[in-house]
Length: 291
Image (cartoon, rainbow, N blue to C red; front, side):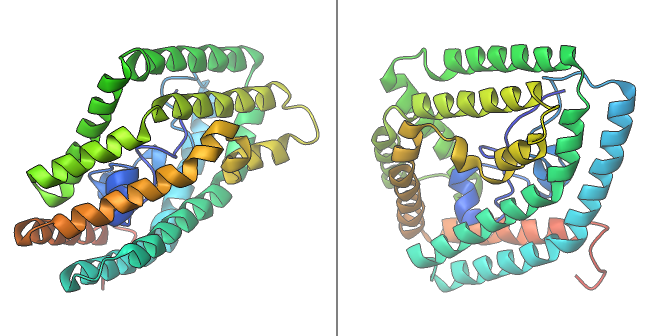
């Protein structure tokens, strides 16, 4: 089964102003039912768990999903409602967006804390052959991503980055205008060789994980895994760390500019998408009927 970091395209950023550009998750109600939501990895292709491991993990996962739905979703609904009100008032500015971004980061951290004990136990129980398999699959994953994201010339990388962003934006705003498409192109060019930095950083985190699991009999194993889940920045490469603030600011600036450029039809589209999201999440069985 596959182990994949949550940070990336399928994180828990339910606050759409951030989620549109930082995650691209298009159906949040499905994401809440998805394995990726509750653990920092997706156990799917990288690791074959035996029957006992699968049984134990699925039981623990059900408990985590129930916890998340009962204790976290009500707050998300309130925050989405607040974001929707800002969109309707036209008051979604940089300060408001940053506040949503902080809330999203806090939500991710809350989940990381919740699932750390389960993840520690799962990794401690791996057999040596499973650890070797995990390492091999990480290497294969890295090679595939290098082929997709690094082998094309830089101008193609930038064009594909812009295409991905435009697709995400249009999920929430509808068809982008010429000015919005141009702004997305500017953002994609500004990130330049970010693909290389991102993949190097991903590889370092994966190597750190494998190294920790190889030494899972050591007394500090729990602490090492907890840091991998809860203090991810500790494992960033130096170039990625240096570039991150500028990339983060460039993306926030992009969101604000695209929203400012949005016409009345696009803002209604965003409002409707947020309303759909609230309706979908409110329908989950774990929430009180009054929602």
